[in-house]
Length: 588
Image (cartoon, rainbow, N blue to C red):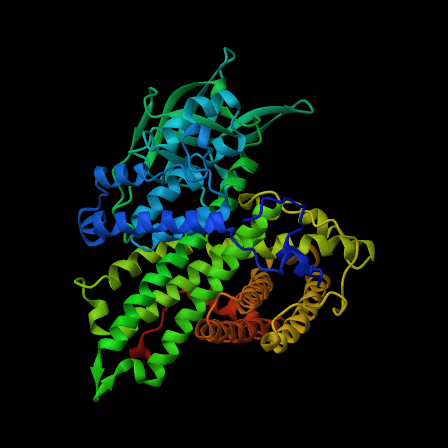
């Protein structure tokens, strides 16, 4: 996409003020002719190789990706997609990276997981923070797949709360550090040669010794590095997941990535960008399952006609395709803006991960339902794809914690304005770091609260979408008011109230979906080289996606003031007190 760089505020972040800058949304980002040609060549090559070499059923059964498959993927350049050409990489921008990754993911979840763990997060800290000597030393082997990488953050007692890690790196005073600890559920652990390891380090601050997180490069051959048994997983079974143990591993200070004590931010930046490829991968998975479901619906005859002619099957196919279109739209609006200079992009990538993973799960579930009995049988790919798909809602930040992150990050800016108005005290201070495990919060430095919307309306949509643009403008205003009302109601206690956080996050997600779908659809409708049949199809998909997004938004908006939150809390306590259901029918 365009190389022109401009500084740009977060689009999702602006929603919390009731604002939107149309120049950041219209026109929808597009590939240059050169990029289109390269993208087609690359995806065709990936498609051909994967069709010939990848046997998802066999890999799932054997719980292993064959070495020759990994070598073949590496020879295509798929181990160094974002690495500069001087180090042997393809040097793809965010959009082309996502497009190629989606193609890989359309074939097999385990392969996509292995490649994503290698480069989306495994050595991403090296790309982001590495100095020249570090890049010269490690990137050439990583980019060509000669060495594989792993990202080591999670521990037995530290999942979403990443700041609570226990692995420690002690300064030996001789230019080396000794690392002791363990990491859990590490993808590529046993096959990797390069590990981005996050550890606690001691720092003297105002006469006190305090722990902070630092990032170290650890190599497999270092004494004291060992591994647990390969995990027996529900899905993505062919990808390798193990525990990694560090027993007094000595590493030189030259292996520190970035600034000592800044590892937490480094880790969060890695995960924030990594979620983008996850969202793109979900698009690839949806396309695969939709193709399978469509072929089955057209070929399956009941009562004298194909089941594709029955209303409830038609509804399912329509919703599946609309979900795919909407997810693809938010992914490429995000990548396009990242290429143009969107620096604070982690709210957008969080939306891509949440919406993409939940859409994929829904599409897979619906596809299996269309296949009916066939879908439940292991001889068909549906059940394997379903098992592979479920992890997407969990890793790289569970969707629950990401919703908290999205909501609390978003309300931080408006809380400043309310504080100045004297409405609440210390809210912005409390929100400085509400979820330490999710990274540094964006500071949307604006000094007012928008109560009503109108002067920043969406106006550049295609005429057929003007009705939905009107809905969007009204919804955006209603959302900003709810942000203000929520902060005034809860004050700094908003941090401890996850259900209103969830609703705010859900509304922000649907606003972004609507915006991306309207922008992309408008761009397609204005293209002279797109046939009318395709334009009609796109417009129908857009309207279905927009109606669904609006419906979900309205439901969450109503529940901000009319809900069962107290009843939920009371009942959940009773369930816990009874260690589950706790009622025996024979007692009545």
